[in-house]
Amino acid sequence: MKRGAVALVAVLAAAVVLSIAVTIGDDDPPPPPADQTGPTTTGGGAGADGPTPTCTRIVGYSQTRQWYLASFESVVPDERFELFWMGGAAIRSWAGAAAWDSGTLESACATGPPTRLVIDVGVGGENLGDVEAYASFIRDAVAMARARFPGVQIGLQPLVGGPRYAPCTIVHRGALEPVNASVAAPAVAQAIDLVVEEDPAIFRGPNPMLASCDMYRDALGHLTTSTRDDSTSGDVHAGGVIGAFYAGAES
Image (cartoon, rainbow, N blue to C red; front, side, top):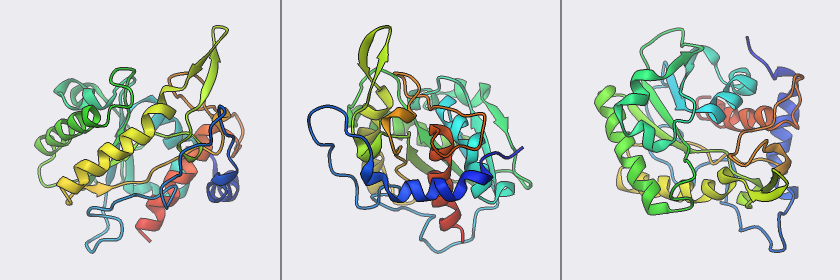
């Protein structure tokens, strides 16, 4: 069942005013991409000629599932999107067969199989911020996706980053720790751009960012949740931002 419909207007408004986000630390955050929610480069798909995909499968992990079920489905044409996920499945997991064999399909498209497959690129604590390492994992995951889904358009988007790609911190066990997702997201976005530049057939998804570091729930980068349709929760906010990109790309 869809959630977040009541909060969609507030979510989209929050996406527009990301520049008021909280700054973490003494330094100003790095400048955001020209379009804070859109791609820095565009491959096939959004903005390109061609038929609208009849079924887009979003491939990801626990953070993906959070924003997908919270509000993403309420923004996009839900019958043309589905979620395939596995807990803890960072991008290196999708470079091998195990995640593809063990993942869970939710909210299946009305008409299958998928004609576009978008990998939501998440990372673990290893190689944190290493653009070249991320790019290598991404290339392997794309190759695996193409082997599993011959002829299907492949897309890439980074995990949800902090406000204006600022690094965020959170108190964990009495100590202040960096939020891994906020540290990794800008480097993942750069790695995706490298891969898309090499292979323009790849669909380039959005660069989603939170409006506040308070929207992270833990040091890994899971999003805050709400039992209500609350645009101030991380999952509803992120789902609205990402959904708006895909809804606009297919309008």
